[in-house]
Length: 297
Image (cartoon, rainbow, N blue to C red; front, side, top):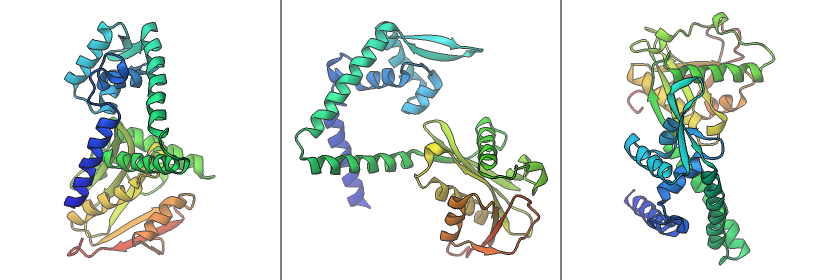
């Protein structure tokens, strides 16, 4: 592990120097990389301040200082959101849009300068490696936290989950007609609900029920299109399994629809075996079970 840590730190130092992060006049524009990135993230359509903070991983103080500096330069203006005066939205001014275009051009030039000294084969290797690093760094930035099932992020995920089921299945999904999955069943000690977030945005969810003297039940697993390919489905499943085991479960159960082929493949590859139906869920086509050895879990 120490060798891996050393390599990560060496990589970070190289990238910091190569992209000019240490230059207080990033891309010769007289402002720091942080301010340039804030300007870029606001973009032509504008963005809510809270989303900017989450996306850039900034505390409110640092974000406010960057925005004040851009305002003072006449590049940005802050206005209340339409329909909700409590929400502040950052917009580029005409001068800000012009500066955004310049940054876009200079960023292309910086990338071009990185690729130019390399052979065609080296360029392809570098770009392919960068794509893989981007994917893995994005995966490492996803957090999974226990969340109340009636939290706005949880409700958003559940709506997206139901929308996807209805879009993929020829049979309309009616949650009220299936096995009970009420919010109180996903609160301790009866269960748990988890939400995965990336840059402050909810991108996945899952739940587990702990019925007394019965196998734990894994429910409502969903991953946003934005987070597909990051291994998040497997992480969510492992988190729910760990939660169930910590509550004393030795056997895990779940059911799923035949249209969710990715989920079916994941369950089979992680030790779940298909079994006879153990409930009367009308939307399910497959029922799975997994025996857990708590001494090694």
